[in-house]
Image 1 (cartoon, one colour):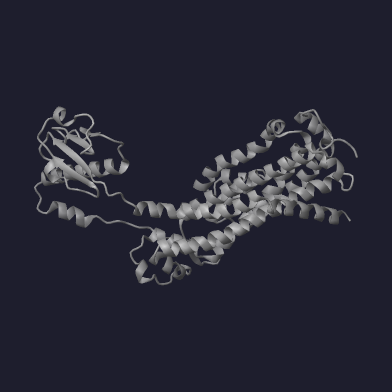
Image 2: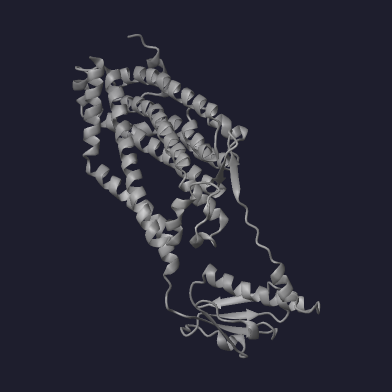
Length: 441
């Protein structure tokens, strides 16, 4: 009978939230936003303005200006006129004035750029790179070795590292530290965002129902514990549903965008799922790190581990924190009063985001290990470790502790909830809420 009442509450909460306009709009806009963030850098790098940047060069050394050459949209125009004559206010025919010191070789910092508009890192980098290369070439010629610049170019040897991870059976799979770090931050942040967002939704829902006296009517038909569990599980199902829809839409939109903008790399990515397989000819010149990332992205085992871990830790983290949010919501009459009582709940989440970066840099270290075992921080920290590979027993122990803590927290929260939903006009302190836990029913 109790299960039927909880199921009815779960259904009511689920239907109420998935039919809201905010849920529908958020479900559609989030995948578009994420795919847009993936595609935007590609589009922005391909868009160039037609304007040419004219840089007047005053070379007091007499050595650098003749060797400067146009690069991209930058065009150099050497002049013998003094700076005071060239640097007249309000000029629109030039981008800026480059002044090269007389002793630039011994004082390479004696290089000044005056612009009539905002300077950009791209322009400054192009200028300093050319000046540096010219100075270095002049110093090499001073050694009077025939073909020294050519020799230096020939001995340049770019080295690329391909990493493979050896599993327990001796098998190998491509390993990308860049992809692991990106996945660790992304999934850790998503757990933080979802737990905080939907946990706060539970708190707000309890406060709204309490202030409208709806709870007084509902508790005449269901027990407070059943009401709390129904609300927590119902909103949790909303979160899982929204996440699954997001993943499907992102996968579809991302695949389309990848084929449109990544060209041959997208076409050949499917052939990279098996380590040791041949590399398609169109990917022969692709950086090995990019190939390793593509192999990992198309590795179904790797993807299954990430998404499976995310679901397990999001559900556990959400249930744990939602119980606490529900208890706080039942004890206050408005959101403003809840802010002070929320501090003990939000501190572990914020601490997790701080420790997240340490866990990404040292996923097997003691800090990452212990924080991935503490139930209040494990949902975020373990997701930062999973992309790097975590022993199965550590994941199992972490999940057992997390879900056992949820059961204990539900018992504690239900004690507070039973008293709090009937309290009006007074904001309780943490000490008073602790007393409620000891009440006998």
